[in-house]
Length: 123
Image (cartoon, rainbow, N blue to C red; front, top):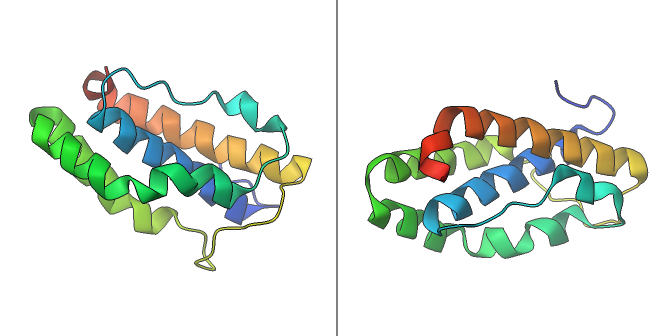
């Protein structure tokens, strides 16, 4: 369920999870962060930075690995635009505890969805 008080942070959490899914499809033995780590002061834009700059490389690497990884990577890549916050901007302020909670909720929700749909390819 989307966090209604901070939908842009929920969306950023989902985007972060999708970017981590692409990374895991591309690179073996990647361990995504635990959602509970988002109880510290962070900026959503900073959390997304490393994986957003590598998204094209991760997509290409996953496609090169073939089979279910390639199919899953294409699906996740196509989801990215829909996961952007509605205003089209990544928040760059330090998150409040409520915003961190919304981010973690979005991250947890999308991670669970991807594990369910792509679990075998993520191993």
